[in-house]
Length: 596
Image 1: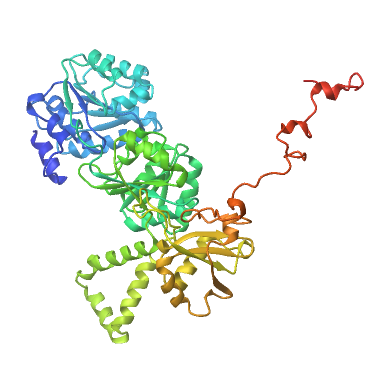
Image 2 (image 1 turned 60 degrees about the vertical axis):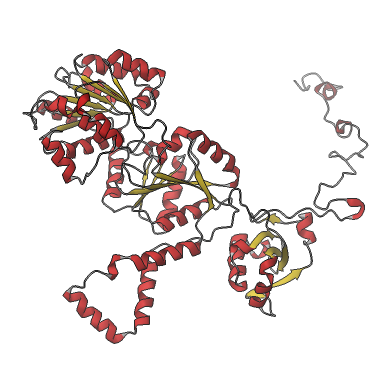
């Protein structure tokens, strides 16, 4: 390895190389063409930087004066190309490399001036590079190495002709490296045409997909998705997090919601200019923003060093999208979490995506408000602020505070300030986790509440009141049904005695809000008359003890059909059937007839 490259790695904190970096930098493979399969986040950018170093530097450790490009790196997207440039800049800084980039969305005239001044390494997207070639803005005659990063993606995006134009313009005796997640038939044909005796390297065969990423499928109730996202961000408090959505409208809505909740948020979507995207990513890197809400335009090419959490606000459209989104975290040996928000109607799709992507996920409910606050307490007690030495100015203030306040008052103020700096967690409606071994809700008792829709009651509003007044948890509440003038709450039989003791004889849960225990399942709940489901717990079993064995809550037998005639088993069309055009025209004057 070149001394300047080794020094750059050491200065960057590298103590060992990743498997793909080890494989491609093998001295026995120097100057050879390589066809490499490596998963996202495996450190392949540094890997191909190491692989081409002997070719472009030759016998020297540093570059000579920059003229025509010596190395060309082609990437599918602007974000990925700019990320590759940043990585290669620090890797080749000690060697004195001059870098240039040619990417869509940037000033083409500024790029051409940079090329005219000379560059050792050019990082480009296919379309913009071909544009410079056609205009005579770049000379590839001195290129010694060409790297196609994520070649499979470039072919999928329709860049085959552009890639062929670029490779045909480069010298035939160059070193060519193809990096691709999979080696499809198209990739194999491209390698056969433009590579010479390429060495095949794979660091993902037989390995679990994204082994450094912990997948979690978070079950949420309908219309509770955004609250679950808030609690996930609060629970993990990752230095950087990305929330993925499928549409620009959802990105806009989530950004507004999270900003209002006190999060420092930026957005990435296709409608933004390249400059706006660059500013958003820089805000994430320098700590001015901690949450990025993005469409899939950000699924490739973004490498944030402290990105520990990916949240799929909308389920991805495909297994590939799931892997590419999740691949923004868990990079180069760092652990990460990928959380899928799964509403009831999206459960089968989530299972299909995970199965197709060959990843295993832990199915769970979203973090409760209590869990978030407990995590806050844990972080507070572990904060290094407790062990940092005080400055002279701080020591004077500490003495004054201790003289004026008791330790308990100081601790209370500390806790309040700590929590005041963070968004309050949301109360989530309980959803049973997938394959919950506890089975149905179990034996329960029903309680009537003296308020309904007329009083603006809702399950989300009612549940915390019942829990607080009765000293129970959300897991001990089953179904909640909201009626016009009163509501019904199902309480686990195991918790009933404690619940009644906590309520006392008045059975009040708030001002003018009282509970009454109901014998059995309320008739209104069985018959579903005027009630809307609260979205919590399993639906009550239908009652089958009615006269004649009829089931209450079933669809009543009609005595009349939909058009008013008696139900005699004959087709409904006999009663009130629409007239045919022929019947309508009967007797109508000419010129006033209906037409088919």
